[in-house]
Length: 420
Image (cartoon, rainbow, N blue to C red; front, side, top):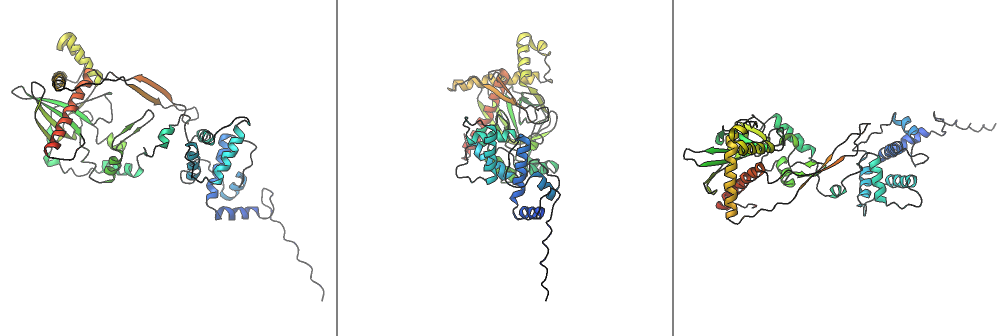
């Protein structure tokens, strides 16, 4: 028989980029088998494009190859896909990489970044290089607070807490204390730094009896109506314990949407509160007290500066002169509150209290926006804090000390475990 002709060699498959041998199919198989390749490749491309590093050949597919498989490649950050890459780089920057296995892509990128940006005779530690990368990729700011980053406490409000707070605002819970609430119709003065403050949670008022004695009322926004025992928001607030104030941010104890809406004592809007009331004698002693649920029918907002200006004007020229300062018709209440505060101060110092006044500074980082819309370098603002010994601040301080005293007395009389 006639020998068969050998089969003709298969025609090489050529893709549009000129590569032979079915490169596109092999690329698809590789990318499908290893899910992490996609995020790693995107991370490499972002690094090269955003840092403008030229002449570096990294292992793995190029952008042309990727776009053949996926179409246009989105180079924006993806919190899910990029978590390992960014997390690894942050660990290096924070000096916490000991015992932490870096992905090989992260190690490769860091090595190339060092090689391309650092002169041969300059030694740069890996953590500094990692921070430089994160800054240039706009993941971190150049003034990133590393101490804050290293803290084990998460200062972000969990998304589920915010969702729960927004749900409560849309559908307020039943007020179980409503039958017990006392309607407080006299104006309650919420004294704060700004008249438009959105997170005012306490106010003071004074009630004069027929015999001349005075009840001091300290009202605190009633959180218990909104945050029930052992709820998600309660557990979050207990874990944080307090709002945390830092130069670059405020980490709230409760979601901002709740603290600045339902729990803020806005001008003229009725709000539920817990009221600490003390009957103050002529010598400044607390002769009786009450703690009860209330509804403030008429909250008023006023600034510390307005209170000081009013009291100063009254001292300089009496009530007629003080009328030049608009305090919303609450001049008489402010004068009585100030006189009560002076009696309380004298009473406390007569019982061996002492005052420690230290200079305080107010440090703020004011955000700035660059021309391209990204975050710019913030402006550092340092100024002396408002005078803590001003009359308005002493007035509020004495009122809050009274509230603390009667709360402590209530707990002690009932043998309740309490932090004094």
